[in-house]
Image (tube, rainbow over all chains, first blue to last red; front, side, top):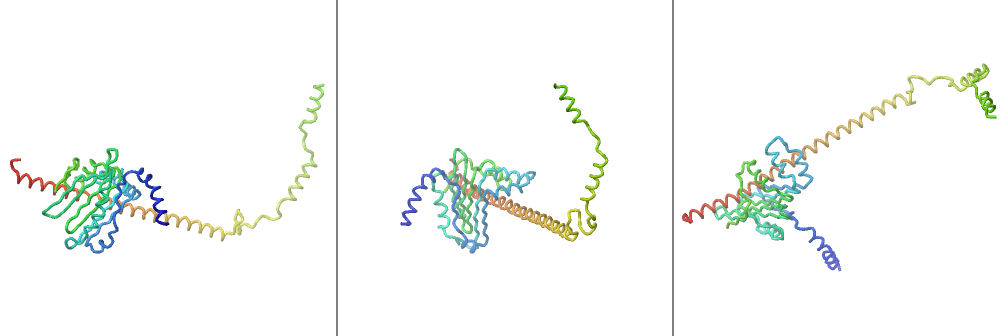
Length: 182
Length: 122
C-alpha cells in the first residue's frame, strides 16, 4: 500500500522533474569513513549564499581576487571532495563509480578523458551545456594515493576559468575542444 | 428695512470694554483654582519620576545600547570570519580545479609527445 502511494507520487512528479531540465549538481556520496582513513581530506561545500559572501570579501584591486570574482559571478555552487592517502589504492573504486554513473545522465558531455600508464592517474572532465552555455562542470581525478571530485554548478565561463589558471600559477590548458586520450 | 437691520446689528456687535466687576470676578476665580503649594523641587523631576528611578532607567537604556552595540560588533566579526573562510575555500576550490585540469593537460601532452616519438614521420 505504502509502495503504491510512493509509485503514484513518483508518477505524478515525473513530468515536473522532466520539465525541470538537467541538473548539474552531483549527489556526492558520504565520504566520512574515507576521510578518517585519509592523511589529508578537503571538503568544500559552497552554496549560493556562501559564494556571494565570499565575493564580498574578494578584493577587486587584487588581480587574483578580481579574476576569481569574475569566475564565481554566475555560479550557484562549488563542491570539492579530495582525499590523500599514505598508501596506494586505499579507496574503493566503487566510491568514484557512484559519481561517474551520475555523469552518464543526459546533459553531461565528457570533454576530456585521460589515463596515464606511467603515473596511473585518470582525469575525466565533464561539462553540462544548456542553450550553448556551460551550466555545470565535473572533474574526477583518481591517482593511486589521491582522488578528487570537483563539481561546479552554474553559468561557467570557460574563458574566465581558463584565464584564472594562469593566476594560480598553473599553465594554461586548452579546454576549448573535446579531447580523448587513453 | 435692511438699513435698519444693519444698524441694529452694528449696535449689538459693537466692542464693549469689560466692567471692573468682571475683571475682579475672573481674578478671584483663577486664584481659587491655582495650586496651594508648588511641587517639591529636587525630589521629583519635571515628569514626576523619582530621581533614582530616572537614573536607573537611564542606566538600563545605556546598558541596552551597549549590549546592542556589542552584539552588532560580534555579528559583524562573525560575518567577517565566515566571509574570509568562504573566500579561502573559493580560492582553494578553484586552485584544486586548476591543478586537476593541469594534470589532464600534462597527461594529454605527454601522450602526444610519445606518439610523435613513435611516429617521427607522421
